[in-house]
Image (cartoon, rainbow, N blue to C red; front, side, top):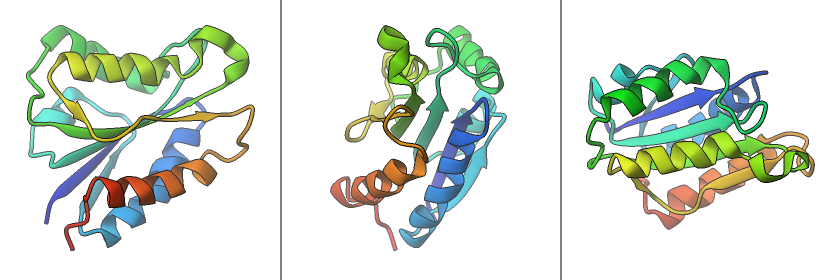
Length: 154
């Protein structure tokens, strides 16, 4: 059974909630799913990752949440080749912050692409100013992502 790893960067639990809400969709699509809410680079590269989904909220002025900083630091410093990694990205932010809206998700997208990873489809950017519950946008996006990227294996 292929492995989907969901990597969560969260401050107040919103991104973790999104991860837990989309998990059953991927299990129904035939994946074994693991959620990492204190992710390390080893979680990503230490064992096979058939597909990755990043659920990352933005704090401050476009910053990564505290639980995600060590992962990003390791990824940046060790610069592993991620040429075999296919991933999706759900970025959570607040458009009232202007230019830094979804800054963590956008930065992560650039960092992953710089290591050779391939994003499948478009990045979902959830705006807290428009959507009270992020999973209201994330669930339909995940269903569509599974279908349009032909990710169903079961």
